[in-house]
Length: 405
Picture (cartoon, helix red, strand yellow):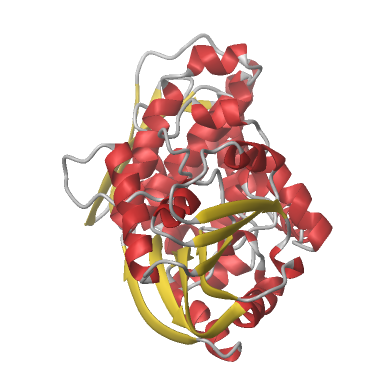
C-alpha cells in the first residue's frame, strides 16, 4: 500500500479543513486487509493510493471527482458507492473490474459494504415494504419491465430475450447465443408435440414462440402490460398454439404437461418461495416436467446477502431475492417435486451482460431522446456491470434446473 501526491489542485474548503486527508487515510485502512487483486485510487487533490493484495485478482482504477464519494461509501455501503457513481462522484475506465474487485474481496469488505447501521436499517425496511404480494408483484414488475418496449428494444437482441444467453462457442453473437439457450430449454422440456405448457414469466414471448413451433400449446403469464402487448402481437405459430395472459402465477388454474419459468423465481421473494413451488406442483400433471432458469447466489454468501438489501434490490428489482441451489432443491422437495438435473453457465451470463452493456452504452443519444436522463443511464450502466462482475467471479451463477412431478 502506498500513497503518492502529485501537484495538487487549488485548495478547496474541504482540503483546508483536513477532510481529504481523513478520507484518504480511512480508505487506505479499509483497503489494507483486502487480499485479492489490486486497485489504484486517485483523489480530487491528486493524491494517489495504490493497494496490491497477495492473491491474484482484478486490477481496478478509480478516479474520485468529489470527496463525498468516500463519505457515501462509508455511510451507505455498496448502495452509497453506486449512488456516488450515478451522481458522477467517481469514474473508472473499467467499471466491471472495479466491481469485481469488490466482489472477490466481499468477505473482507462485508462491514464496509453494509454501510452504517441507520443506512442498513433503512434499506432493509424499504426492501421489506416491497414484498411480492399480488399487488406488490404488479408494482414491482411495472417498476422494471414497463419502462417501455422501445427502451429494451434498443439493446436486447431481436428476440427481446432478457435472460442469460448460452454461448456454446466463443465466436457466437448475442443473437446466436440466445437462440442456443432457447433451443436447450426446449430440449430439456422433452417435447414430442401436443403437450400443454405453462410459462410463468413469459417475457416478450420468444420462448413461447419456439415451443409452439415444436407443436406445444403454450400459456404464457406476465404482469407487464408492455410485455403482454408485444407478445400478443407475435405471429401465430404454424404447428402448436400460444396465448398470453396478464395474470399472477398464484391465480392460474388448470393442469399442464410441462412448466417453464425463465429467471422469474428471483422476483418471487423469500416469503413466497413455498407458494411458488406449491403452484408448480399443483399445475403440473403427474409425470410432467418443470424447467426453471434461475440466478443463484453462492452458498457461502447467502446469509450475509439475506441480512441486508443490496443495490439491485434498491434500484433495479424491488422485492427480489436470489436463492442458492440448495434452497431450490429444498423448496422443490418440500412441495413434492423431484430435482432431476441441473446445469450451470455463469460465464455465459457474464458475456451476455457485457454484450448488453456495450449495446446500452452505444444508445446514449437515443436514450436521451426517450427521456432517460444521465443519472438513470449511469444507474443502469452500474447495474449491468455489477451483474457482469458477479458472474465473472462466481459470486452468482445461473442454471437450468429440471424438476419432475
